[in-house]
Image (cartoon, rainbow, N blue to C red; front, top):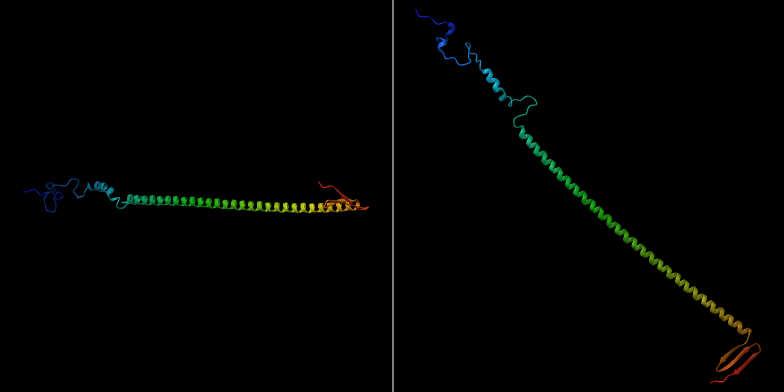
Length: 185
């Protein structure tokens, strides 16, 4: 009489399970015991695809590098603009200083012209004063001459005077006219 295999150890085809090569890590209920560690090992490879909040995305380092490059370019442009502005400020200051120096020179030239005009006016005033002094001296001389003439006339009237006319001395006095002859040499 043939022994029938236990139904618990027989698969659907009727062959005993002991004769079937069972995979490693698989029990009688076909539960894959070894798959869970594989899922845990695969989990880190899946996480970057769907990251948690705050974790870096794939490709973010490239974006950061691009952003850094853009920021560096912006900073370089700002530095160049600042240098240009500083140069413009320096040029403007130099131009203002030159304008101030020109104004100072013009003022000095005007002051020199004014001083020259004042000196010319003073010279003209001195000339006028000298002319007035000369005129006064001339007037005084004329007055002195007139006084001398008057005094001479008064003296002639008071006493006789000898006048030489053609070699003949004529005495004029209160007592009459007297004629004096003198010998010619």
